[in-house]
Length: 276
Image (cartoon, rainbow, N blue to C red; front, side, top):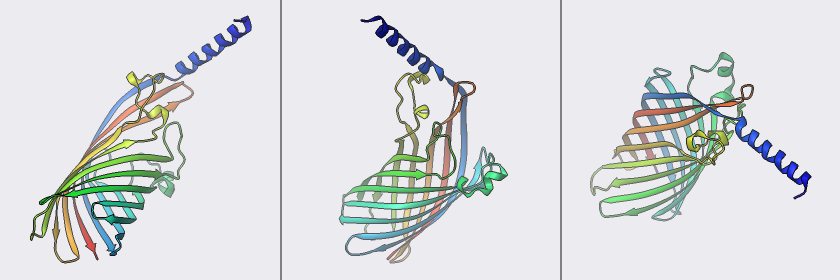
């Protein structure tokens, strides 16, 4: 090998080495939050014989207790979606969700005035398959969800367009002649495009290949009570485990601050459903 090639190769290796070691993870600990919520919802669904359904949903969530913010308004979700079920055991749906954040103690007065801080836009696409036994109906739903934010963020730390895959397995107990329908489901939410430095690395070493991670696991049990031919009430309890990797990249100091955030949330809710 010629001398100039050896010199060039040596310089390249040195630059790669410096690049790999330029950023180092510094753990700033972990934060564990606990909360108890009360939720109210309303769902309106118009059905046609061709298998098309148009739905409008409103969901309001209030923290009765939270280790960080205390008792306060948490979130609201306004959803508009269209579903199509060509056969009894298969359904696809698409929709839009307007997500409104509640107050955050870390927000300054300027941030509170900027609606981009507390608004998020979501779109989703779902595929659901189900199978009905004599007294039990099982279903599996796979949902791709995109959350879009319009405020200013550091793209190395957070995404403006955040993709998730949500997998839900559920079951309903069918009681012929009875107005109640007990049910339960569990859902696992996985990141799809977490920023490079937010991904999980072996031993927090960024020179190793990172990977996406499970950011949320939740389960819900409840009972639906049909109060008339078109309307019903849904009473439920939901337990949620949330996990987030909060990244702060400090260029002046040349390292990455990593804080692992965990959330344990209990929620009791009631929802009114109208189908016609």
